Amino acid sequence: MTQRTKLLVIDVGNTNTVLGLYEGANLDEHWRVGTNPHTTTDELGVLYRALFASHGISAESVGAAIVSSVVPPIDHAVRRACRRYFGVEAEFVNPQSDLGIEIRYDNPLEVGADRLVNAVAAFARFGQPCIIIDFGTATTFDVVDDHGTYLGGVIAPGLGVSLDALIGRAAKLPKVEIKKPDSIMGSNTIAAIQAGTVYGYIGLVDGIVERIRDAHPALTFRVVATGGLAGLIGQESSFIESVEPFLTLEGLRLIHERRHAMAP
Image (cartoon, rainbow, N blue to C red; front, side, top):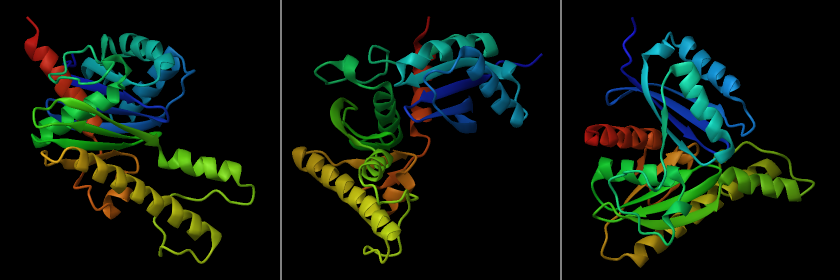
């Protein structure tokens, strides 16, 4: 009989859902799939189990599941899929969860679960004040101080969203791949759009980080990036020091372990 020793962590974002499978502190496998807010329990369950099967992993090895979601319409389906296809009750992280950090926000219930999970993971990883930049559908900047207190942050349109808006409003501009061009000045339309998109976004990121640092002169921040485009922007940013692609998954694992350790 398969032992239920693995932790399934699920980060449901507006565009993509990232799943990870932990054995203790080790991330054994991870997958990225599109998020469909109208998907059903069975569609999710079949998809998740197919991902497991493609790596020769038994669904019966899952002993617990924890979820961070910013897409409420899909939450019920995710919860039922974990129950029906893995036999576990999924824990959903929210601002009222025992995160081990103070949330200094006007209304903590407004803070996305992923932002809090990232804050937990970054402070646990580096043990110092952090600015965490998550490059998703939106790009979020979240700030924790030297006690791990969540101070708030900034929400900006994501790079992909910004580019889609430009292409959608300018009839003659073509769709382009988001990548660093050979030069800051494009010699053709595609390269020009790529230069404006990538370098313009680097300027946005560094400008916001600089203003956050100026607003907290007593704190020495570690600037951490995660999310799909973290590697691209992190290579060119003047402030990003660490790119942590699995920061949210790690935060979910830490929150689960905290809850398990404190359970009677």
